[in-house]
Amino acid sequence: MSRLKLDLHEVYNKGDLIDKALNDIITRAVDKKIDEIEIIPGKGSGQLKKKVIRFLEQKHIKKLYHRIDKDSKNFGRLFVYFRYK
Image (cartoon, rainbow, N blue to C red):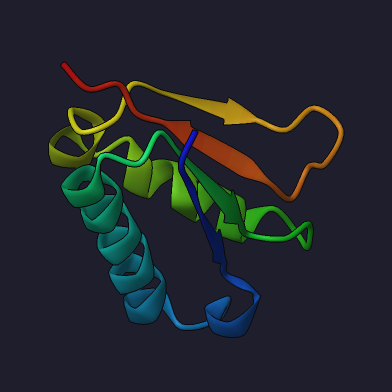
């Protein structure tokens, strides 16, 4: 299984960089047919995690992946799963 990891701690307060990082990793996953992306928005106030989820729920992004899982043991982590034909 192939996977990518994106840690957003470095850009947590830079909205444009967050969107770019998310766009880049989704594009890379689709181009290389990666099965899973681990996104780490961190725990904090939860605002960054909400922003990531809002980004992933945009129609043009949502059609690219199969599903999202929130890590039940670590509030500051999300998984995005892809399925290819």
